[in-house]
Amino acid sequence: MSLLIRRCRLLSMEAPQGFVGVRTGEAMRGLRVRENVDVLVRAGRIEAVGDGLTVPPGGQVIDARGDVLMPGFVDCHTHLCWAGNRIDEWTRRLAGESYLQILKDGGGIMSTVRAVRETPLITLTEELRKRLDAALRQGITTIEIKSGYGLNTEAELKMLRAIRDAALTWPGTVVLTALLGHAMDTSIGDRAFVERTINETLPAVHAEFPGVAVDLFCEEGAWTLSDSLQLLNAAKELGHALRVHADQFTSRGMVTEAVRMGVLSVDHLEQTAGTELDLLAKSQTFGVGLPITAINLGNSAKGTPFTGMSAGIKFANLRELVDRGGRVCLATNTNPGSAPSISIPLVVALGVRFCGLTVDEALTAVTINPAMMLGFKDRGVIASGKRADLVLLRHSDYRELAYELGGDPVRAVIVGGHVARYYASA
Ligand code: NIG
Image 1 (cartoon, rainbow, N blue to C red):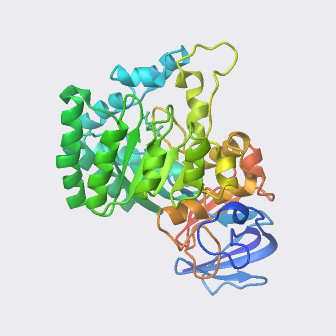
Image 2 (image 1 turned 30 degrees about the vertical axis):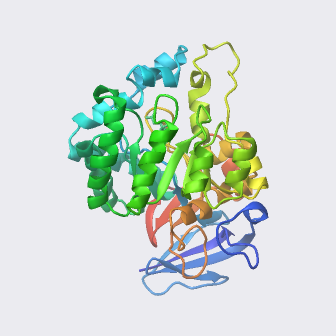
């Protein structure tokens, strides 16, 4: 099966001359655009990029008519598998209650935990399939999905199985993460919960899903620093890659410890500054910004009623992280509580407006960098031999992806060489 995409304005995301590996600093900028380029895809891979290419007999042709063709988006942080909804809680937050107080009172993440525990595997899988379809429509072709709303052995395994099963019928690539330390299940006592997670849930997950990364949420009302380190050390000993949610509302020293332990990524970083930011920037650990979350929590991040002003909403300072040489990604963080949106274009738009990134940096942070973070060297750029995960935009200027807020920029999504979605252009 072959496919020719003709007359593209190609944003290949190829590295500047001589540069290999994760893009940092200057290598995140200066993206090259080539006009009137054809891209030939065969057997799921990019076969050729050039002028005047022809398609083999029986092949498909898409005429880009000068619009932008770029790599499919890689969303490296989501909680896409859940049950129930948190709309009532959201209206309470609008009225001034804080996200952390609702969690402390047994709501928030814990209310989704209760819903997930009650939901059969088949229903969880079906709901996830619908959300994966929505992700594809946004141009996401590789996605990471966390468990973390089970918080006991049976329910965490159920979530991981639902993610694995839903992935089988999705054309893109799903990466599973076991978010074993997402909250404290206080119903059995904090200490007992931490010990059960480390001694029972982690080994069971390791036995069935040995390759998954293990993740946790180090925060007031969630996992303490010392409990976090215990779980991370146990997971590391079993050979799991590690990720952490750190510094969302309060800074607790997790970033320093994460760097010391060689954690793959620290995600959130709203409170990270000074020497910790510097330490992160100089390390191999990726920093993942999740700007939809800050926008969505708004005043309820601090529990401040609406006064016509924002109560000091904070975003990750990705400008400084890039300037100091850090490895930077952006992601949606889609979840029913802090980020009810699967829009990567919105993430790009917010990353530019509130995290201090340039358009080129933001696009690097949703393509090649998260691909590298998730361990994929075959995507995130358009070049001969790479996997043909591509997005054709409705725009002829790629900066419109960041300029538009809440737009509908995707005309076609190509996954593994197949046209997975095509929307007639306006
Ligand atoms: O990254 N902070 C922890 N986890 C998610 C929120 C999950 C939820 O509220 O259900 C986050 O924002």
